[in-house]
Image (cartoon, rainbow, N blue to C red; front, side, top):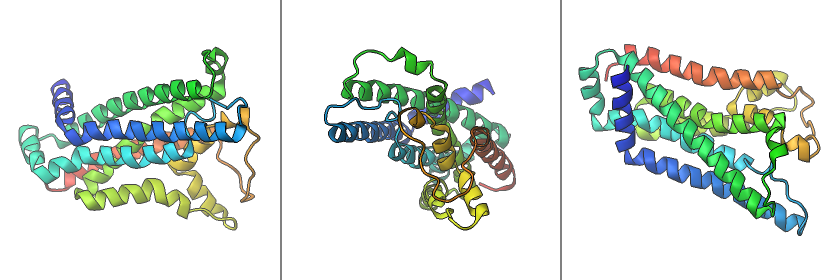
Length: 262
């Protein structure tokens, strides 16, 4: 497994689309967050702009789901399109170990990318908001810690789901469309003001789970109105979504790679 991890790291590092995707994804997230703070500043007209709630916006969250989901998918799809996957499985017949190594490397790289992106967004938005002193009290706030953890973990979650879809579909265009539909469009489709089970499906998506865990907004803003009349997702339920989605994605990928030919 050590040799596999090293080999997968070399392949991912050599994949220009993966490196470019990490950089462009981080820049896209940073742009969304900076734009939100600037918009708050224009509205506030010199008033104190909230930093904690504006570090990671809804638009940035959507960018993470889409771009890093596609990045995770391309780790597998690029090998299928180039034929490298045949050489990989010829050298290592244990296919599940190959996918397990890919999953570990993708998780580590995207988690580090998420942490760096979040810290950079925090520093830049704090400077733009006119707060030049480091808010140490904010870091000890449990709501902020939960918001930060959920935002950083959203990067590997999206990548692992994309990797699983790439193993199942293996075709670039169809994989990208499936990733965007499952992670980005599906949460907007499964919403209802009449049926509770539809609302439960919405709460079971990473989109809703991230919103439920980002409770830092409630420190600065009043709680959002409940337009559906149904229960909002609990913190425990949101963390369960964060656990089950990548876990099921990896399990599906490990099972599918055993029964599908290359």
